[in-house]
Length: 146
Ligand SMILES: [Zn+2]
Image (cartoon, rainbow, N blue to C red; front, side, top):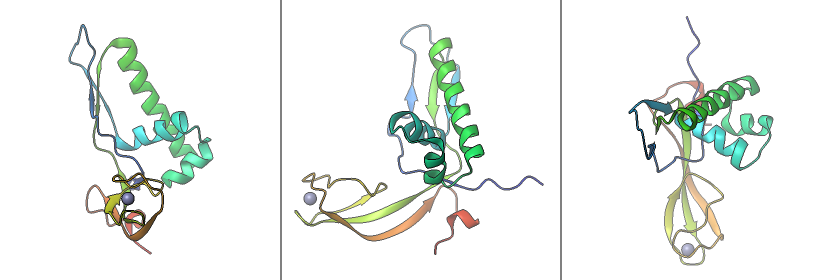
């Protein structure tokens, strides 16, 4: 039996989920998983090294390598062949933080601890509560609290 896939921790959920070629759209779609976008973000935008990325996503270095290889191939194919990119699905979880701003007293929910207050942009914010959110009702070790 294959081992069940553990959820990969992400701290960013993209809002743009579809990209289309401006001409000669064949309609062919490359689907990127949420955790593949997170891998690209950590490695290629945040410029973290692979062990740091793997630690952030709660996976082994080998698994991280597989995730990012798959992501890069899909993005490259879309650009070279002019296919669509859709972002959806995957095995991932994220932590939802209840935040409080000390400057304007605004309460908000964030999935990234480094965020700023969306109202006043202050970074004087604290976490008042947090919970792990998984895509499905994941009962595996990766999504158990404590
Ligand atoms: Zn504020």
